[in-house]
Amino acid sequence: MSRHSSKSKAKRGISKWQVNPQALREGTLRLAPLLLGGLAFVVYLLTMAPVLTWAHDGRDGGDLITAARFLGVPHPTGYPTYTTLAWLFTRLPLGSVAWRVHLLSGLAAAVTVALVYVIGRRLAAEETREPAALGATVGALLLAFSPLFWGQSLIAEVYTLHLFFVTLTLWLTLRWRDGEGPLTLAALAFGLGMGNHITLTFLGPAILLLLWSGRERLSLRVVLGSALALAAGLLVYLYLPWRAATNPVINWGDPDTWEGFSWVISGQGYRRFFFALPADELTSRLEDWWNLSGDQFPILAWPLAAWGLWGLARRHRWLALGTFLHAAINLVYSIGYDVSDAFVHLLPVYLYLALWMGQGAVYLLMAIIRLGRPGQRPQEVLTLVTVGLLVLPVVSLAEEWAGMDLTHDRDAYNYAQEALELVEPDALILVGSDVYTFALWYQRYVEGLRPDVATVNYAMLSFDWYQRTVASYHPDVVLPSPDDAKVTKLAHVLRNLDGRAVYIAEDEDDLPGLQLTPVGSLWRVTAP
View 1 (tube, rainbow, N blue to C red):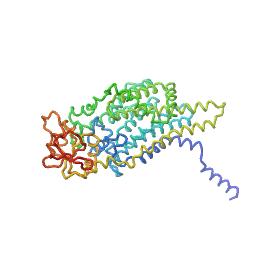
View 2 (view 1 turned 135 degrees about the vertical axis):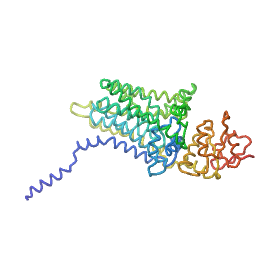
View 3 (view 1 turned 60 degrees about the vertical axis):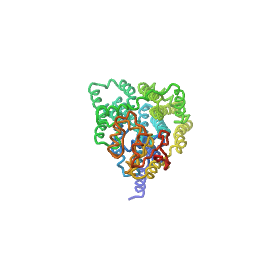
C-alpha cells in the first residue's frame, strides 16, 4: 500500500467524525423541548421540599397526599385524575411519600415548560428557525423560573398538572387545526384535565375559537368522535363513588351516593366564596395582584409580552383572542374568589404572558435581522440582543432561588411529628383548622406515627359523612348526637374527657371552665 493511499484513508477517517454544524443545529432544535423540560426539572428537584410542607401555600398537601396514598377522596372537587396519578407516585421507592407526590408536581411543571416551547415554535414556524427557537426558549424558561409557577412545582398541589392539561389541550388542538393529528386526542386531554381541576372549563372559549379557525376540517364524524373522547375522559370521575364505597380514611362527601357525588364535584362547600369578595376589599385585591404579577418576570420582559400578543393578533388572531380570553376569565375569577389563596388561579395568566413574551422575543430578533443591508445581518447587535434575551430567565433563576428553595423546610412535618409523639397513649387531638388537620392526617396515616391516637377535625363533625369516617376508624371517639344543631368544640371535648387524654391544636377562648396546659405545640385539656 502506498504512502499516499494511507494518508487519504486517514483523512477520510478523520472527516467521518467531523461535526456537521447544520446537523448539530438540527439535532439541538429537535431536542430542545427535552433539554428545556429537563433543565427545569433539575432545578425543581434541587429545590423541592423533601417532606410535607406548608410553604408556597401548600397547606392542602397533607390532605392530597393522604388521599392519594390510600386512594381516597380529597377535598372537593375530589381531583380524581390528580389522585390516581399521585397514587402511582406514592409507590415509588424513593424518598418520603410526600416527596414522591411533590415529584408529580415537578414533572408536570417540567412537561408544561417543554409544551410552552413547542407551542411557541409552532406559532413562529413561518419565521427563521433560529429566532423562533430562541424566542420559544426564552418564553418557556421565563415561565419555568417565575416564582408562583416554580413554587407550585415543589409541593403537593393540583395546579402544575392543571397547566399541563391547559398546554396539552392547546397543543393537540393546534395540531388538529394544522392537519397533523386527530381532534379526539385534544378532547380526551380536556376531559381528563377536567378530572384534575374543573376550572379547565375556562379554556372552553379558546378551544371553540381554534375549532372555528379550522372549521373546514370539522365534520359530523369529527364532532361525534371528539364528544365521545371527551366523555371518556370525564369517566375518571367514576373513581369517586368507586373509592368512596371502600370507606377510605380520607373520604370527603362520601360520594357513593348521588347527593354526596354532586356535593363533591360541584365544590358546593366553596361556592359561597365565588365572586364574594367584599366591595371594600376590591382595591386592595387589585393592588396585591398587580404587585404579585410584577414579581413574576423581569421588568424588561414585559414589553415583549405586549409585542408578542400584538404579533399573534396579526398572524394567529383566533389563538391570540382565545388565549387573551382564557387569561381574562382566570383574572376575573381570581379577583372575585374570596379565599386567601385565590392568587393561584392567576397561573394561566402567567402561562400566557410567558408565551407572549417568547413571541415578542421572536419579533424583536426578526426586526433586527431585517434592519441589516440586503444579504447581511447586523451580527453584533443580534448577538448582544440574543444574549440579553437569554439572560432574562437566568436573572429570574438567580433572584428567586433562595426564596424557592425548600430543601431544608420541615416545619409542617416537625409540627405533626412533635404533636403526635408528645401526647399520651390513646389520646384524642381535636383540630379546628385545615392546615393543622392535614399535617396530622399525613403523619398519623401515611407515616404511621402513633396509630393509637385519634386526630379529629371538630369543625367537620357537622357533616354526617365525616362522622361516619371517624366512627369507622376511631370507634372509641364519642361523637355528637344527631340531634345537635351545631357541633361545638366545648361539647365535643366534654364528651371525650372521661377516660382519655384530650388535646387541642389551637389555644382558643371557647372552652370555659376547662384548664389548658401547653404540651409542645398542643394544649392538654383537663377539668379544673
